[in-house]
Image (cartoon, rainbow, N blue to C red):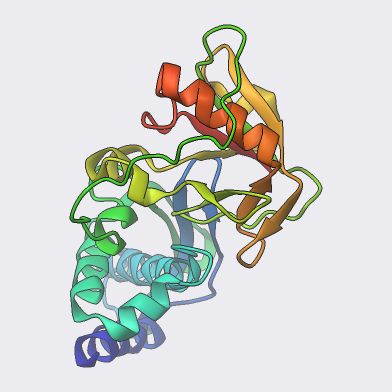
Amino acid sequence: MKKYFRFFGMLLATFFLLTGISAEAAADWSSRVITATGTGIAPPDAGSPGQAKIMARIAAKVDAQRQLVEVIKGVQVSAETTVEQMMVTSDTVTTKVSGMLRGAQIVAERELPDGEYEVTMQVPMFGSSGLAEAVFERPAGVVPFPVPATAVRTDGEYTGLVVDCRGLGLNPVMSPVILNSAGTKIYGHQNLDYDLVIRDGMASYASDMNGASRAGNNPLVVRAERLSGNNSNPVIGVTDADKVLSANASNGFLSRTAVVFLF
C-alpha cells in the first residue's frame, strides 16, 4: 500500500509543477484501449525555446499519465471489484500497473499555440503489456463448463455467441459472467485458459452486429433477460443457456472466447 501512495504522490506532484490544462481520457470497451490526452506548458523560467518545448512535452506526458491513472483506477475488473480496490490491497498489482503506465505508448502529439504541447497516450486492456496482465492471477486450473440441464439439439455449426443486452444498461467489465435465470454460471474466467484471457479478453463489446466479428460468421444469438452483478453480468433464460452449452459442447466457441456482448 505504501508503494501505491508513493507512486501517485510523485506523479501528482510532478503534474502540479509542470502541467497546464487537462484534456480528456476514457476507456473504449469496443476497441479495448484506454486513451488519455494531456496538455502541458513550460514554467516561465524554462530557458530557450527548445528547452521550453521539451519541458512542455514532458508536462503533457505527465498530464496524460495522470489521466490514464484515473481512468485505470475506475475500470471494473469484475462486477464487484475495480482496479483501484485491487491496488489498495495489493502491492503486486500496484507495481504491475505502474510498470504498464511507464510503457504507455504515445499515439499522437503536437505543439499548440502559446507554448503549450499536447500528447495522447494509450494502454491496452488486453494483450502484450495490457492491464489484464496486472490484475488477473493465474488460477490453479480450468473448471469445465456446466452440463446443460436439458440437452438441446442445435442447427448448424455455431462459430460463437452473441448476447444481446441492448437497452438494459450493461456495464462493461474485464471479467464478465454469464448466468442462466436459475442462477447457474455458464461462462466465467474459471472456465477459460488463463493465457488466452490475458491475450484476447473474455468477450468483446459492440453496439450492433457489425461489431460482432469476434463471434464469427454464424453466431448463436440470445437475448439477455436481465442483468446482475451491478448490471455487469448478463442473465439469459434456462432454455437459451442449455442451447448455448449444448452448442458449445459440439463447437467449443466458449473455450475460444468467441463471445460478444451488444450494449
